[in-house]
Length: 214
Length: 214
Image 1 (cartoon, chains in turn blue, red):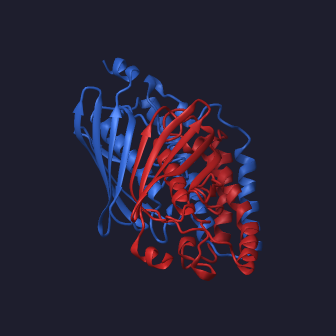
Image 2: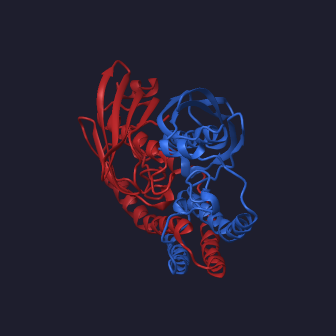
Image 3: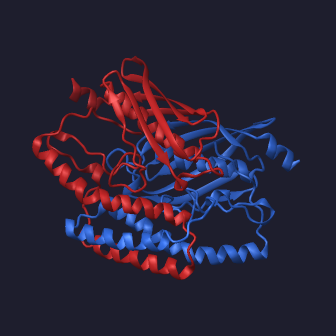
């Protein structure tokens, strides 16, 4: 149940605010990304882990002082647009996200090169099958959004062809066909040894968005 | 491409080592989980964000001192068993994981109550559709493992019934049918307003595991 509005250009005010916010939050999120990796990959002794924990807890004390009343996903910019900075796949403020930078074109092609480190591991040395589905769901959504066919995911099917090695990967998605309010999009994940997984998503244009888009 | 061996009891030595490691790493991972949440939910001023970033970077300096040569998933205990502590859904050392605590029984039932906070948001106020698939893939794997039918995921299909609200959720999985080396398992995600998504996974017993299990 993902939905994706077409991304319009930001107003000059929104663009400046976005730049300021990125400068503020992205370096913290990047440090937190490395912390996530080190939680699974560091092998220091217990006393060092405890000291690191105290450092992180000092950061928590600072960051807890003011809490947003709405999630980032609930925040709207001028004109109803949204910034996906909290998104767990592409969000620059979300340390769970690698994050993916997804390029799209109006034909509905979406693609992204990204890296999955040890924190995304399922089977030994391989990306978790559910992380594969998480990434493919996201790029499918970009494809339908870019094609002007945004929608809620109705069904998502993943076929696993081979294990996806941790490391550098590429995800691609495109529109397969359209019929009324439904759009079928396909995607694949590619590793050094070729395609590791294929996906199909059926996206349904919700009534509210149909009316808004005219 | 997930595979799941039946979980045997640990030896006394392995159990003591596991306890020691959990005491060392779990509190750091829990602090990192809160940091992930605050990266998307804190609203403090830029100078406070910078100071928090410096705190986190002090932790990174400590944790970088010794890096594991293998991922946690590649590490084997006595007898070839594995501890899934790095797993992005259930891993106690992995801040990406909520983490889920999954209960199973030998009939192949698996279930877990867990909470998805703001860092798992896709559409406004709702869990990302790909996170839904990530969690359902994981519990499907527990079901087939508990039934003694561990396997690689061949195909995963998710049908989204309604949006999954952020907050307290329950995931359930069970064996649907078996035929030779294939096992079909089903799962669902349940929120306060009922079932939000259903999943089916086809798991294929790999030759290496077939031979090992006799």
